[in-house]
Image 1 (cartoon, rainbow, N blue to C red):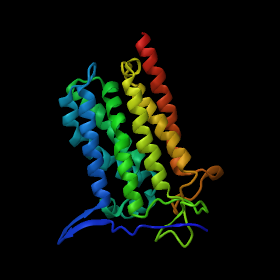
Image 2: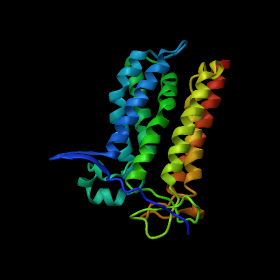
Image 3: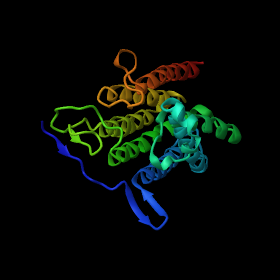
Image 4: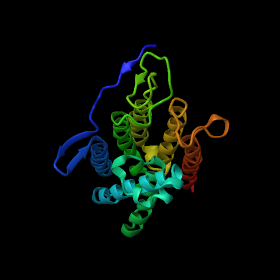
Length: 265
């Protein structure tokens, strides 16, 4: 079978004594900073419901929300038995183990709290937060590839990759699929939606499109991604990632319907 050799990139970018900088951490930092700057730019555009200073101040909130939500989501959704038996392992985020669905819930909770404190329209603020979220997803999935984790199922396609910890057979580079779908493509779609004044003026539409776009992308990529070994396949050959994405589709559609009804009212 044809296969592409895995580029052996050290997961550790820089190590000086006790100071260790990993690609995984750098991906999160890059995604947060670029998303933060993009969110400020969106807030500065005409007819924005959010002030630039509010988008600026949200960076710290978003950072803690993504890390805490992502980690707790992974603990609760994917390996609760292990972490409940070994609670000391929960804080070891540098070993990997983050859930996007948990991070999303964390950002939503942080947004509710933040908008109430600053008296901002929650739906309008959530639209901006969702518009920039794919940037972080893009870099995060690239970091998954560098770490040789979350790889895909075995395949004979010409672009299959033999991962160093994935056995001797080539596999789908599902991390790259996710980076392109959940990250690059979705951020372009959301930007095009945001450019439409008729849609931007209806708070909740952009957030709804994001939830549907991510949910569909994740469900599709899960067809090529190897499920977690400790979970395996669920009912009818489905995966945990697909089941967690189904509520996103329903929530996204509900948000869009709500936004249109709110605008008419």
